[in-house]
Image (cartoon, rainbow, N blue to C red):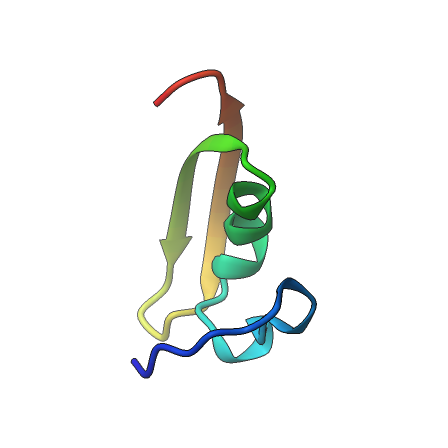
Length: 56
């Protein structure tokens, strides 16, 4: 991993883990979420569940 700073409009989701495109925009909007992601052996996203919650 090589951390970098990006503007919200230029976040490189295509270079990030497959689940990031689903949960990161919600968190950046200030939402609280409970999320589950399942990957196969090759890190392909198989399943996702995201629920917005009132508190963590």
